[in-house]
Image 1 (cartoon, one colour):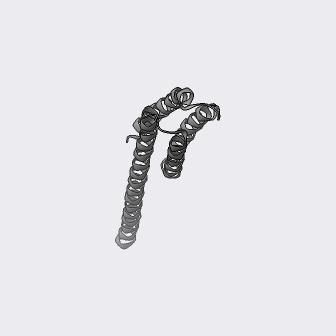
Image 2 (cartoon, one colour):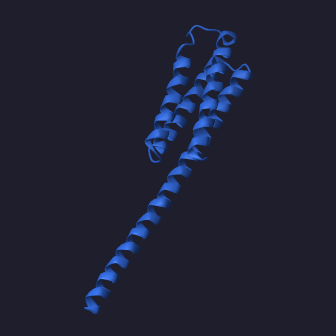
Image 3 (spheres, one colour):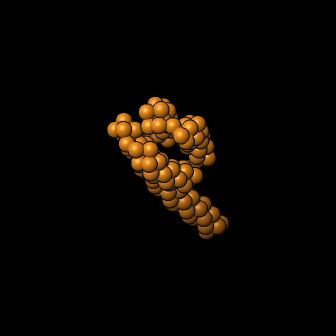
Length: 140
């Protein structure tokens, strides 16, 4: 009887140890996912800041368009990493990017730089604020 009880205790202890190891692995994986997300979010914020700097420096519309593509690539990295963290964060990232691209889409294609700059500035500032809020929510 003591042998059966010892086997039962050993089985529970082994199961508990396996569970703890699994949790530890998940926790580490979760930490890695959050770190990758925060890093990509920081990179996106830097690229949006670079776009903002281009606008302020009277760059050409072509240069601004090229930086918009860089921002889009950085956003795709954030979106991929956000899906590893939580669906809520992924939704926030998508909503912020959608609002940003909607604002950019409203800029007339025939606008001059002086006409487009304030519209770009507004879109970029709103996006930066959204990214900062998302980063705070994620604990970055």
